[in-house]
Length: 464
Image 1: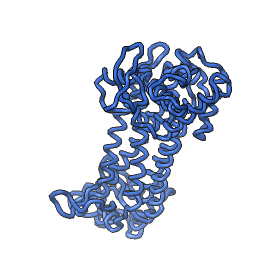
Image 2 (image 1 turned 30 degrees about the vertical axis):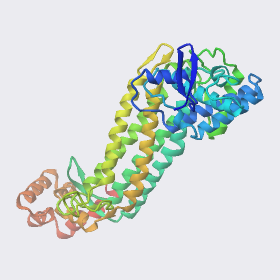
Image 3 (image 1 turned 135 degrees about the vertical axis):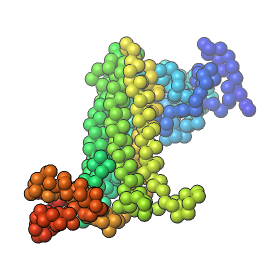
């Protein structure tokens, strides 16, 4: 391997000749037992966009010359596009401010900028990682800002659209199944009749509410800590620079970023991330409820409920030919478990704001973006590979209704609760239906029983 010698305040050592990052980054990684958990693509993109916009703004303000600006912009653009992802080896388990990753970005961008200007990789001239790439910034305001940029982009362009696909798929099934009668269930026990479309409409409403919850956090993610520099005072950051970078980020992403009303809050706390994670967890909880219902409703096919049929994605189990497992709902359940765990990590991270700085920024950012990716992907998967292909077993669903003891509920207003309960108990003891026992006891005429025990009438809003 071809190497080069680098020297800084930490000492002298040999590094790979093709490395864009410098000795500080290498030393930080080498001296830490890395986990292999690195910042996701969305975060590196956001970090590079900040550096790009900072260079453009510094150029406009005359803080760096035109050639330096253009070289940094080109270099940062390449990083944002993913060209140099292999040059970001720093683990998320590092200094709590994310300084190692911020310097990783500064070094990569400066190194590539120097190469663009005819220099060599690893040099600090003519473009310096701190003096030029990081000018007007601190890790303390860059890292939380990159987290917000990446999170708002992911939420707006990936998560919410994915959930809208799922919501629409569920709403379509609600319409398609509106004429399918079935027995409702509460406490895992038979309840009164309902329409399958009403059940799926409830699922669609859960996702609709989840989308709104996520939209509610968007304004808070749009607030950027940029300009706070070290502790929130803005030392070394020109006010025009701050606004220029934020405007540039809005233009790059098409999202309405603004400066945080209090940079002290933006550096010292990660409340917006905690809030967003809570909203993601709530949506995940909704997905778990829906996935479990789909598993139970499709159970069988002959010895379970079997009211619906899920798309067959596997030819059978490893030992039982023809056994079709609810693959997608179970995948959803595991994703939910992961998101709930990530939320716990984010919550602990949010608790760790000490004085003027939260010191768990990397792990918060990683888990937040990971949860978004998982939620978006599994929502699309559930919609495309499961919900859209669900079929209703109408005969099975409606066959449960007549045998349900809960049918006596419709008799109670006419004959009283106690007498209706007695009919239900006798029906259960004898194996007869509520209708059969009611006729034997002559509690009402056949015509009245037909009206009261009509399952479709029980599902109409006016009957509630």
